Length: 157
Image (cartoon, rainbow, N blue to C red; front, side):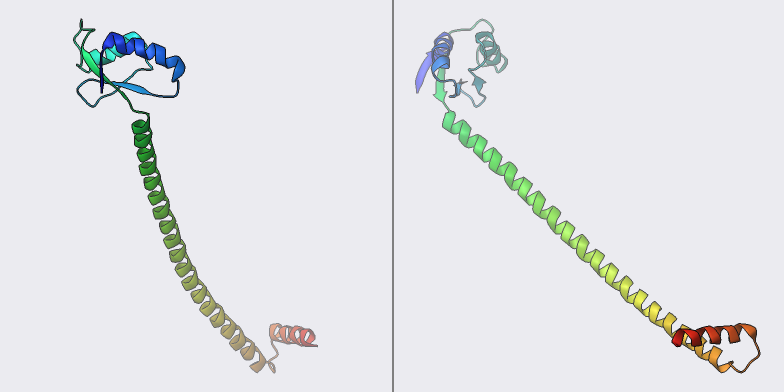
């Protein structure tokens, strides 16, 4: 590991920024919290001060510079994989729920269809019974029955 003071790191950052625009360098001072070197000089010092890594007047503390492009990419890749796992799990749960709802709807509709078929059969039987009753009264002198029988006879022929 290379040990530099803050001024050297900032100078190194300025020199490398033109060359390594896509590489991320982080300042790490005896801890885990990173400070992004892509920030300007004052922002880096303020970030270090707010994290308690250097004092308010301190500009010469020793710090270690680590190139963490692969580590950052690996962390980013793992975060993305975790997000993808969660999204895939949520999607699978949603699909299962949807399939379960469709199956329940199918059971309800099948039960309703069976009930309606039974009711329709019952009504057809009732209509047949009523027609037979009308035919039994065919010799009556009721005008309504005679008109119905005449109409039904015309429809048959």
